Image 1 (cartoon, chains in turn yellow, blue, orange):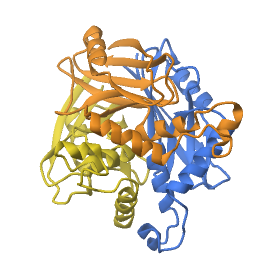
Image 2: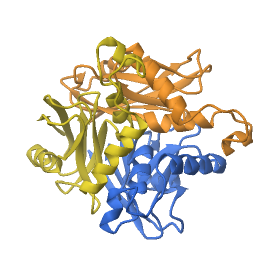
Image 3: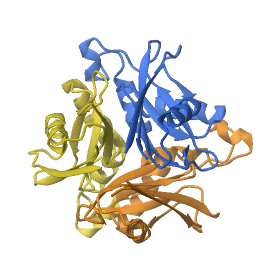
Length: 140
Length: 140
Length: 140
């Protein structure tokens, strides 16, 4: 069994933003030399997500508006108990639970085994600083 | 290490519907010959889910109503920017994020290692056409 | 390839509660002898979650309030069809979908490969009875 590990680092200029990291993950899969296996991609931070969906800017705008409705940003200590600790990012912890921490993708014949429109995104909910994503590949 | 791959195709007659795909996944696990390992089951489409929950029709009706409340269908271009591209399924992309893209299930002694009530479902949010689910098994 | 399986049992005194199970999972990883691989941790019950987030009591209070807002407990048969079957836990099935069934964590150099603040939690939404979590490790 082969295994391979790589960290990717992203520093997004906005508080909430999504970026397509499929090329970076494809590169890691190639570097792993794994032909058949599984690829785990996870945010290493608890106010960020890795998810698979469509690379369409309108949809991304919809996600932001929708997540803001479900878990509004509110730095005050009134709405969120977490923000009484000096943090202002309680909402980011909730947005991340909706969008998910990780994806597991099959590797078949040395490639990410995707449907037509599947693309991997890093979802940032408390940005403006460097944050890490882990890619772990196992297989043969 | 063994690996095995199978695609399942579903064509559900409703826009939103859930079906129990546990028998199909069990069949794939048997065909893989894997005794100890992991089984990834994921929707290959970005407006569909694979999730594990209870096979109870009342609960499924509750999920539909609940998801419709959280992310209402609205084909107009007003609510969702995605629907200005000619699509009408922005809501389906959101419902899918709540219910999840994939499940990873342990394989122990050649079987899906489940709790008493765990069953695997395909969740369709933009149906009435053939859509695919990937089953990937790795192990020994 | 090595594989290892362990069940953890939790009996939480409240209906909804979160507990940090990272030490138990670390112990399982050590017992597995796996140096490089993947660790699946999943609830074996469909009204419970396993998720990764921050071990901060204010945040946990926020999650409870937020989940209660998204999917309120209501034992009556009016709101949830599932509760016409004699159950009272339809809300718990929904809360579990938001928080997720499972996490997959990389194992690197014999340890859970975590970011600084990542901790694994068991999330209970219908407690006051013994319930199980599965830890499955594969790798080498």
